[in-house]
Image (cartoon, rainbow, N blue to C red; front, top):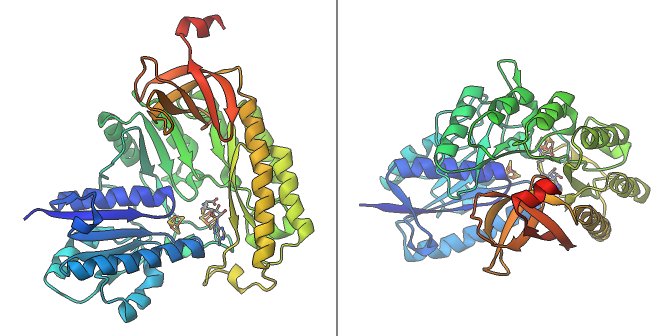
Length: 442
Ligand code: SAH
Ligand code: SF4
Ligand code: F3S
C-alpha cells in the first residue's frame, strides 16, 4: 500500500536541507509526501534547539501530533534533528506516542526504523553523533524550483559559549568537493538556477586541503548556475582569498552574512567569538572595499550574561559604524549544557527586551538607509515568485540579497532581469524592468 508522510521543519537552513535529505530517503522507501497532516501515515518534525523559544514551539507541536494520533493510532511520529538528544529521555519517560527519535547524524537509519516500528517494536532512538557522516551519496528531494540548498559541511568546532550547536550537531567535517559539484550539477539539471552552500561555518570548509575559496571557484565555473550564495561564514575564517573569488565571479552573489553577536571586547571574549571589535570593523571595511555595493547582514545577541549598558552601547556603536543592510537580532537564551549557561549575572528579561527594541530600531534606520542608496540605480534581479500584494507583480532579489517588487512585464520566474529601483519602503524595494538597450546606454 502507498504510504504518505508529512514533514515539518524548524530552525536554520541546514535543517531545511536535512529535511530534503529525509524526504529523498522516504521517497526511495515508497512514501509520498502528504500536504495534509491529518491524512499522513507518518509525521516527522525536524527540530531546533538554538533558543528556548524554538524548543517551546516543538513541544507544543508534539502535543498537537498526539491529538492527531489519537484518531489514527497506527500513525508514526518521528522527532528528528537538534532537539533529539535533549528530548530522548523526556520521550522515553513521558511521550509514549513518539515512535522514533533520530539525531542529525542518524538519518540513514530512518527506513530501517520505520520498518521495525511497523513491526511494533519499542521506541526507536539513535542520537549518536558521527565524526564522519556527511550524507555524501544521498540525494535530497527538493521542493522549490529556484534555489537548491547544498550542505558542504556539518557540525561546528567553534564552541561559542552561548551556542548549543556543537553539542547537537557534533564535530565539524567537510564533504568532498567532487560530491558537492555533482550535487550542484544535479540541481541545475533539475532546473534550479541558484545554489546556496550551507554550513554552520561554511568558510572553514576543508576537504583534503581544499579550502572554501577553492570550492567557490569550482562551483562558480559551473555552466547554468545563475547565482551562488553561501551561509553562514564565521568572521575568523573570512579570508581575502574568499573575497577575491567573490569579486572575480559575477555569479557569486555580492552578499556576506557576517555575524557580529556583540560589540564589546570583554563580551566577545566571554562569548569565545575569537575576534575583537576592531578586527570585526576592519573586516567589514575590507569586504566593502573588495566588493563595492556588497550587502552585509549580521546576527546580534543582546543581554549576554554580564553585559552591562555601556558594553551594550558598543554593539549599537558598531552597528552605527558598519550600517548593516539587515540583521537578525536575538535576546540571549540560556542553553543548558553550554558554558555561558553557568555564568552568573544573567541580564533581566525586561532589560533584554529593552536592548532588543533598541537594536531593532537602529537596524530599521540602517536598512532603510542602505535601501535608499539603491534608488535610481539599475540592479540585476532574479525573478523568484509572484508578489504577495499583487498578482500583476513579481518579487525577486538583487545580487546583494534585497527584495524588489516590480510589474511583471514579459519576464518569467528564474529570469535575471535589469530593474531600475524607484523607491525604498520598509524592507523592500520597488522598481521597474528596463530594456537592455536602455541599460547599456545608461
Ligand atoms: N554558525 C553561525 C550561527 C548559527 S546560530 C555563526 O557562527 O554565526 C544563528 C544565530 O543564533 C547566531 O548567530 C546567534 O546570533 C544566535 N544564537 C545562537 N545561540 C543563541 C542563544 N543561546 N541565545 C540567543 N541567540 C543565539
Ligand atoms: Fe554556534 Fe559559534 Fe558554531 Fe556558530 S560558530 S554554530 S554560533 S558555536
Ligand atoms: Fe537550530 Fe540545529 Fe540549526 S539548533 S539553528 S536547527 S543547527
